[in-house]
Length: 205
Length: 205
DNA sequence: AAATTGTTTAACATTTTTGTTTAACAAAAT
DNA sequence: ATTTTGTTAAACAAAAATGTTAAACAATTT
Image 1: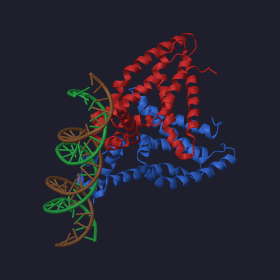
Image 2: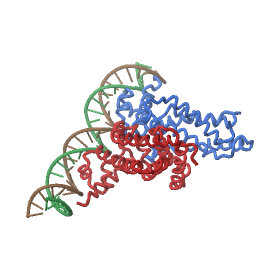
Image 3: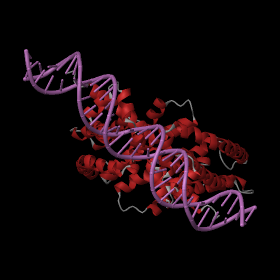
């Protein structure tokens, strides 16, 4: 059939609703309504609210994986450049999902079962990425390109730094009402890159 | 009667429940149960869940005000010291309420009516504090003790910096499972003080 | 002592939300 | 052409949550 346009629309709207209202606050009927499908249709595709939620989050995770993990597949790129690429891609992913950090941090605390799900889904990939990354970092450290670093820590630094940029954005804009988000994001991404570069090698630039 | 022990207990438990589950996720029956009072009792004191919520948040705000605003009442204290005191007190308040930043940022987005309430309750005091603070900063700037600064911006810097420390704590601990929160908080508070000091006068220390 | 306030139990009403079912029909696939 | 799949509407069932009420009694105030 028409390649599941409605099903996709449901996911789309569900994402918005979950992000803006949280799992507990989102309403399945409202999601159906905003998606322009009948209430029954929603339950036809997704048995329960919980399942719908899992699909939404699974898709986000998939997108994150795609945008980030491919960096490690690039051959013949110095690790320093890879790190820059990593920060930028992660940041760009968040630019397209600016509410995600706040949402994730909140849901992880509010619904421990969600934290479990995240671990289940994300850890295997993360371990793989960390292992690869660590090897490259070690090799680069031997050449004196970077200082010796723990890959997991560095990744966490990147994630935290980028997360932070998005979590404080609404605070900042509430203080400076006319704030230009695009400009803010742009500047912030640059700053984060510089900070991370400085961390992996204080002598760069 | 026995000075409303039960009423207080309800507020206490409600705070925990709201913070840990969000407004939408918290359950009035569960709050009553955990507070060791009957379901009717809860509605006897607080007509609705909404009202209960407002009381809880009102109390938190009150505590924050008390711990922070008294700094500005202290006479004969150099503004630089006041700033240090301010950072430390705000940080200490957050130490006692480590989930509050995450919760507030989330609720403000998720429930716009809560943002309204916050503005209503907090803005008058904030404006007052900012005005006072600005006068003191200007005076100190004239003496060359600090550089010229916008008081509102400085306050925002302090709040953001401290908020940040608490928002990332759970992220950090998920990476380093055995993390010592006390040590982390202690170090972080020092760092924040230094950062702010450096901002108001780059020549200090 | 009488009135008020705090408290419980237990039932009930109401509303909100989730999830199901059935009947009907359209579109697509076989 | 017929079976399968997508879709709706409408009603319904079930569950979960909020809020109310009445009866009874204990503790405290006045």
